[in-house]
Image (tube, one colour):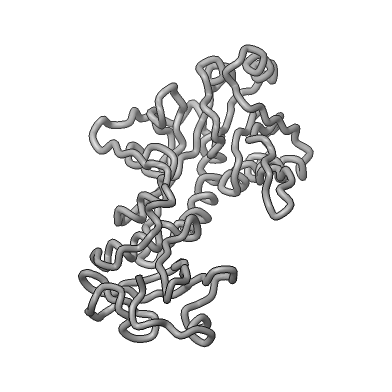
Length: 299
């Protein structure tokens, strides 16, 4: 098929690579414009931009698709289908209608649960036992379209958002290839009205750990916010980012360091497996403890 690809972050890249590898003609890649990054604040192209250029695929990065000229340029590509993966711009109706087979979205949740911006974070933070990817036909509403293909995966007791991000990215790539291979033959199932939840964008204000909460909630917070923005606490006034954890035996005053890197919560305890001190790289808890002494309590 003649495919227009629309995506921006690392999560999108495996799908672009899979479509190109499987012989589809990726005629253009739409992505967000380069933005200042790094110490020099130089404009840095997106992950999709770099991947498309490496494959000699034309790249476009309009700031909006709402004006008539941008919509006409999109329609002039004569695409059979558009594949959308974490693109970051709203697609107006003329864009949705332009490809012969419409626009298909790879969404990292089991719709209708976790529509919206942060489905991986929210699934872990809510304690969901499973998640997955859906290939959805896009409509004007937010992630409301019919689902064409659905793949599931369990959420392990130590999985982080980073772990699931990588797993679901690969699953989405395989699923979109399978979908295009049977497009028209696969049923398109409308989403049920029951079970709709929204994955609000993660706010950095959610990252401060409250040790008075139950251990199960603190553990989900740590894993759900890892690697970004990273749940954090303070150790003797210095910020400590906690990146991996698991539930542990023990009890004490909330924030009390029980043994090693096991910390008491309001109910139960968590064992910290990976941390990042200010200005340093992430370390295993064992490695970190060889270079720092924990106070009696974390705050």
